Length: 273
Image (cartoon, rainbow, N blue to C red; front, side, top):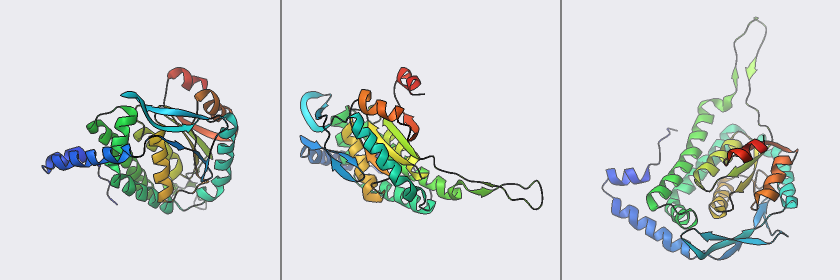
């Protein structure tokens, strides 16, 4: 396993294949257009669930009349269920050998790489990035998956014997997962940062409740689908959408949440500390 950056656009330039890059992106645009306007559930323990809070529209910043999809306006009750599902899934996922968790992330990287232009096109519609920036965002997400997997394997799961002070003693440094992590991801790097925080927690044996920014729930849903397809069990990863004042606040206050990975304003970050 040797890590290499995905660098899609630069590889195309180096090989003189820029037109293929543009054709692949345009094909991605055509494909995502056919998926707009649908209703999407939250996912708790691997099952799609509708919220009693109703739905909200995910619209394009370039055209607010273009509804990309309708997503669940989650409630505090939904958030409690998500945390409970992640807590119940923790023993099985954390007991997986680190090699298997790394293989799952490598598979996810391969799937994401195969779908990079589709994901980049969706990002253009949902976030507003141009094709070069959107593809770079997807490339970074793929890099997170592969780098974390390589680092975990190269360091043997970060478990190692330590030096001995006395001849008959044995000391080991052991990486242990904390439990349930709440991942609150931002709109500005909707796939790269969401992937980095989610995979960083998962690959080390934690379980995750992923709550994306309400401006970019679609890309987070695609991340959830890719990770599940690659082998992350339903108990290890929950997908939850909704306002910060309900689902976000519950994740901050819930005593079963062992850690929070958050990207956002300083004020909100300090309030969650």
